[in-house]
Each structure stands twice: as C-alpha cells, then as structure tokens.
Image (cartoon, rainbow, N blue to C red; front, top):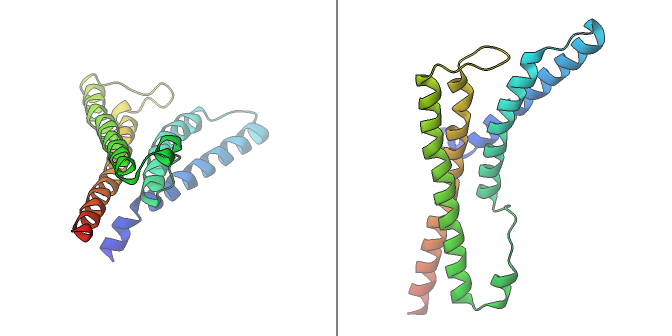
Length: 162
C-alpha cells in the first residue's frame, strides 16, 4: 500500500494543488463579482502552487516517458551512439534537476535567515519557496530512476550479446 502511494505521490500532490488552485480562483471570481473586491492572497497562493504543480508535472511526465524530445540526431545515428546520447541526455536531466533542488534548498535557507515575507499575505517566504526544492527533488528522483533503468537496460543488452 505504501509503495503504491509513493509510486503515485506526484499525482496525489498535483491533484491537491490543482484542486486548491481551482477553489481559490473560483472564490476570487465570486468575490469580484458579488462583493466587487478581489482577494489578493488567492493570486499569491495560486502562483506559488503553480510552481509546485509545474515541477510535479515534469516529474510525472518523466515517470511516464512523456517528455518531448528532439530526436532528429538520434534517428540518423546507429544504436550504440543513440544509447550514449540517451544516457547523456538523462545524465544532464539528473544534474539539472538536482542543481535546482540543491540551490533551491539554499534559497529557502536564505529566505528563512533573512525572515523574508510574502508581499500579499505577509507569510514567511520560505514556506512557499520550499516548493522549488521539493518539486525538484521529485523530478530528480524520477530522472535518476530513468537514468538507472537505461544503464541497466544497456547492461542487459550487452550481456545478451555475449
């Protein structure tokens, strides 16, 4: 049960983010038309949740193998070079998303140390800033899973050729 939940944690968190964003946007629209006043905090929370949702969506796409790829070079080279290009691509994806996670942690620590607050709600900035390293962590894990799977797939193919 826990393993299944962890396998689908990005989808669960994305659904929660999307539901909260939808409710907040709806409440803000009703507030504008009924009370002629906008709720400024809804825009702020929705923006921060969109950052998390984007990173979680990228992790879901990575898990499903649904990221867009520019395969024109891969289509014209041999199988071995194609495999190397795929490994290099996923290696860079792991490094890039890992860098976002790593530097995102320092961003959050800086926000916490400086006691930064959000402009609209006056809440601690680090609470929403933490969405960046959290989302990037999920993305890094999924790219790392694919990278390892590609390496193992290559090993299996090499062993089969022997």
